[in-house]
Amino acid sequence: MMLIVQTFMLTAVASLAVAQAPVWGQCGGTGWTGATTCAAGSVCTVSNQYYSQCIPSSSAPTSTASAPHTTTTASSPPSSTSVPTGGSGMQATTTRYFDGLEGACGCGSNNAMFSWQAGSAGFYTAAASQAIFDQANKSWCGAGCGLCFQLTSTGNAPCQGCGTGGAAGQSIIAMVTNLCPNNGNAQWCPAVGGKNQYGFSYHFDIMSNGNFIWDNAVVDFKQVACPSNAMTDFSQCVCASGA
Ligand SMILES: *[C@@H]1O[C@H](CO)[C@@H](O)[C@H](O)[C@H]1NC(C)=O
Image (cartoon, rainbow, N blue to C red; front, side):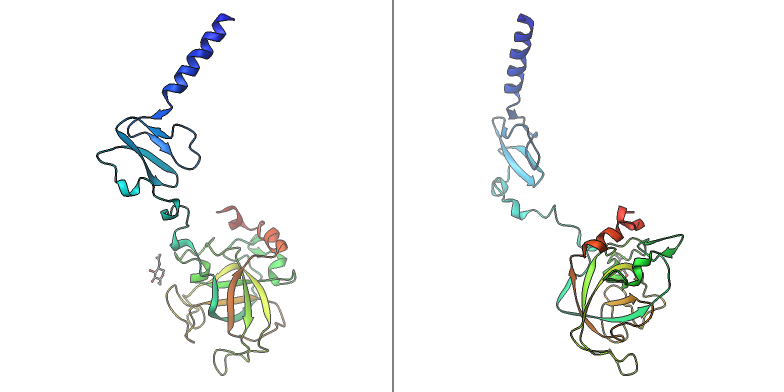
């Protein structure tokens, strides 16, 4: 019994001893449960949202000692892997294709597409131009895989003789499951930072076998949350696991 009490007291003393972080030690940051005050002669200084450190007073930059978390960019994804979200008058050209294949997000098996890719489940799938598929030029499992866009027809085709457009104002939801590479498709599918033959920076080649509600219409596009059945379907794809 005596021994247990003694052990407890030693532990209590030991934890008092670390109540102050040593010079150069960590003293804060998201998830930090240790000491948040610093040894004499040092100041707890925010490096970023995840790490604060005891810096000797003479070298501590006083202006950042109480830097608000809003100055950090640590939790933002690198811009090179994000995709344009559309909206605000952003427009794209559209075409239609059907190849029955898995596509560049791995949505199929033995290279044959999953049947839901053909548009029977209340949403369409599309091969997006490179900037929407992946701004860093990946050609497999791009950052755009599994993202959904609302495409609203302007009613107009991008040129005379390259489609009839259709009724303005019709909308569909298209999930990105494939890449339309610029190489070999420059007429429609621009490279990152480039434009297609009709002056547009973005393109959606919509998977549809048969009649489609418009004919190569120019669309307003914006990223939207995917319908829940689309998210469930996408979870089958190779790229859903972050491959
Ligand atoms: C992607 O390709 C475009 C066009 O070829 C090029 O301008 C750009 O620098 C490339 N981006 C990266 C991250 O390699």
